[in-house]
Image 1 (tube, rainbow over the protein chains, first blue to last red):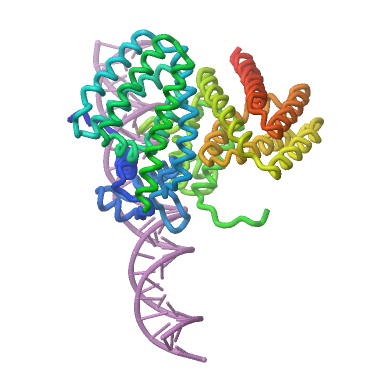
Image 2: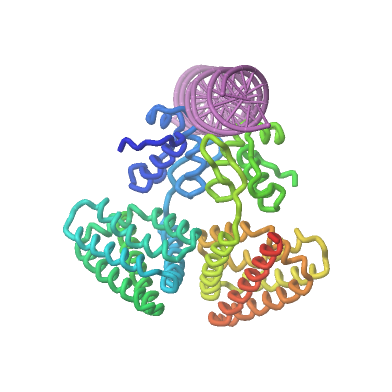
Length: 219
Length: 219
DNA sequence: TTGATATAACGTGTATACAAAAAACAAATG
DNA sequence: CATTTGTTTTTTGTATACACGTTATATCAA
């Protein structure tokens, strides 16, 4: 990847830290010390600070003035809040997509589902997650609502690490494929009711699974 | 308000610029030059830059690397996107509030509506806007979903300047009172259907009004 | 006058310096 | 031994310096 056009360091740092937090490499509660991070990443404090400001606004980092930043704790309540909102927005997206999706996008959607299916047996979770993201992103884009897309992507990313857990289960993957295809058919037939039911079940299943994971984690 | 505990300058600057943008004092397209702002506000570039990073993430400011920040242009499409999402989330909030609101909050809600009513004839638009915000905030809080509250407040603030326009119309104010009261009754009776219809009309009316304003503005 | 090119002015990106708060530690006192 | 107080260290908050890209200006040739 020698593309590497100029990106301000703050964005590089932002992406780096963001990934690290979402993937669980930086654990909740862990302190983010500017000088340490600066040395670690080979930059000065300035880009670090600016990145932290952004992470703070995204809710991934908790700032305590004069005390510093730490990776935000995510309680079960927080997750539940996110999932409730996400469900609402996903249904909204399904509605808009149902009304607005074009035939090309429907084709893309079908192919995305096949792509995901082809990865059923892989153990490259990153790739699997990406295929899932790609599928849903086609729906998001079909809503033709930039703000909605932005919010949904954000909410989804907040749960990256739990989604990864979910995808480890091969049976879960199979039902995902079925749900994807059912969703595709519903959108193709412009069957709003059906699409929303599927999305709802889709999310609620994840929700259930994630909550299980959490309470298991905190034994 | 001599409470005034220590707030980092970045937050002071952030709030200041945010207000200025939302109230239209800083106009879309206007450049935000760090040194100029720093002198103007009597601080150094550092807090200015950090505030700009935050505004950027909120979408109020557009950054072009190496060229600087400017107040984001809001197109009619953008506004429409925001309003679509907002409608969806308001309905969601109405649902949760309907299920979860307690009797104390119902009392607060009633009082908030009376407070708004008492300001029907004022020309202190700020106060009027605040009373409206307070009313809706009680509903938001009743959802018991911090994330939802955060998103709704954010979306609402994005449209502050247009809401102010709307409130200038005294007839609009009267219908707002009626809608507020209708909403209060629906919540009290836990009538979800009704509550959602009211909220939908409430928002759609604003939506219509704002869109009118916009197209009028850009004659 | 027009257009190209050098150059100066300006503004952002990044690093660093310094001040002040918070935390950690040590010594002294009861 | 516990607690308090003073000191040192660490870390953040803010200001400033310098590097470099971008834009504007001026100069000169056609």
